[in-house]
Length: 197
Ligand SMILES: [Fe+2]
Image (cartoon, rainbow, N blue to C red):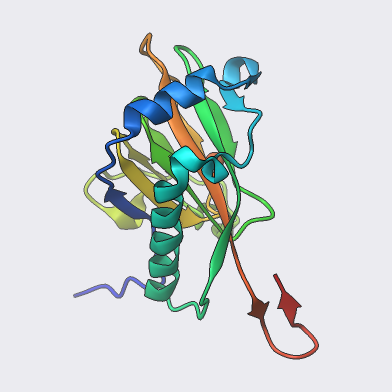
């Protein structure tokens, strides 16, 4: 007996060697931060990748996004980063489950390590039954959710519709990351449904 596992939800994950991590951290810690109470802090600056300090990282994210889209077979020739911001999660804080609306791809670049990011299996809601779902650690077919432990320099890119959360930080340190949203750029689609982004 064998299985055919079709249509995976793909998350690009790659370690980026970047010598400016400490400068990124300093920049975010000095930024004006919006206090989201238990849900941590994010920068008022919502286009942080447009700051010259982050220009090389921005280019890497654009190239990796194009690589991601090519890999999953989407005919997109160009993309733009529509917003980007810094997050700081402190002890006992978390970010609740969410997706990123008004966006195509989303991602995160980790400036420090910290508590895990948890991705939610999008198939659960498709079965329309409230059932016990066993989270077999050795069987990706049965995952209810998937945890990934970030480390400095880790870049993740995923489809914006994929629900995810940041689990509660248990350490008395700053968990600092840079999040971003990506959209296609240029003419998309055929006549009567064409848009120019
Ligand atoms: Fe998010």
